[in-house]
Length: 52
Image (cartoon, rainbow, N blue to C red):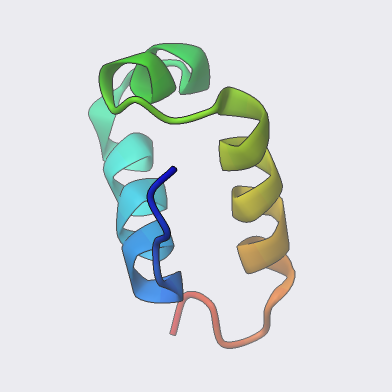
């Protein structure tokens, strides 16, 4: 398992948003656990300074 920083997760979330891929396909191509990806995306979206 790779430990990623908050910045790395935000970059992955941005990449997914601009990729045009489903979350499942994006995760498969980037070797991410889809459940954990959704969890991190939800957690970071709730953080007020996440996308500033």
